[in-house]
Length: 209
Image 1 (cartoon, rainbow, N blue to C red):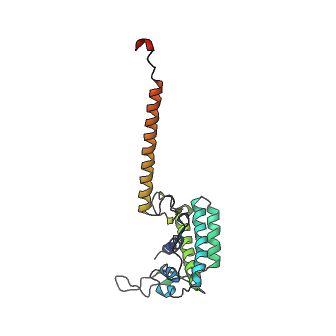
Image 2 (image 1 turned 135 degrees about the vertical axis):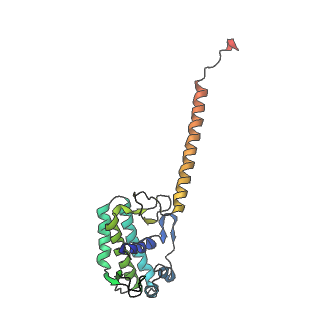
Image 3 (image 1 turned 90 degrees about the vertical axis):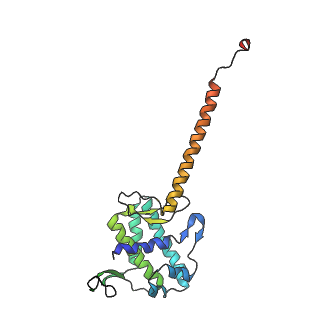
């Protein structure tokens, strides 16, 4: 498994909140545990106290995406480095639980965390995964959805660095809104042209009526 895969942890956490819509799904210990996905052992460590701690880490990760999205590369890196320092991990070779076609261990790199609580473990993996993604693909591959009011985080893996939205749904919504805006502008211009033409027509003298 590529270490950059762990960057999805950061995206999942950041997107539990939609600031512009005043929505927050990170409200219970169950919602914290869901973020761990298949890692049930790590999820079981979560307690009610982790809700507040996860929200704090979420705000710091969102700040990384906001800096990257605005083009402030150095700031994004500095913010991410502060998370890496606070929540360290130990890369290890793993594969005892997976086998290849020949029945041999499928060796791969794994991020082993040594957390004091569930938040520390999740934050360590999320920060390291995001760091690997950033250094492998570039700071500009971290973005925030442009389909207002959505500002969900995303990782751009397109070949031409063209991604602008967090999902196909937001991309479709933005395209429809842009199309409607163009049609309204065309209608307004057509109406304005008509009014201008009417004003420009010479009036008929009374003697000719």
